Image 1: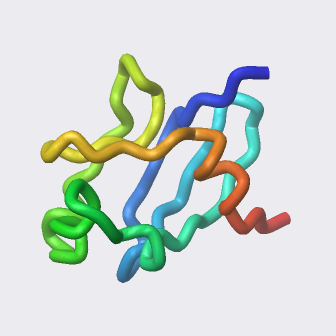
Image 2 (image 1 turned 30 degrees about the vertical axis):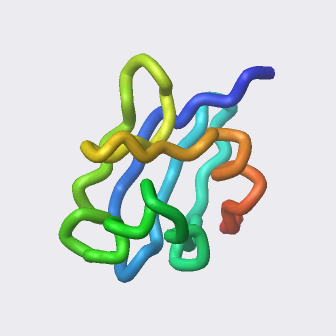
Image 3 (image 1 turned 90 degrees about the vertical axis):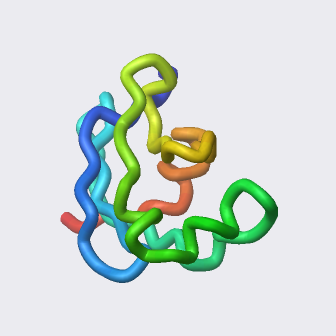
Length: 81
């Protein structure tokens, strides 16, 4: 199955709640992923919070061009049952 982010909500700090097309949902902490030229600006919490679910890529994306593969998000998501 090809994974797609269907819904995302900012929770706190660098933690985002996600729901995927297979029905899985949970939280992902991206605080350790904000390295490198494209992600460094997202350490500014206001810029980080400005993510959206890109309708074409079907994953998290930011205005500066940063995005994360849905597979990466899925693998790093903490699922709560």
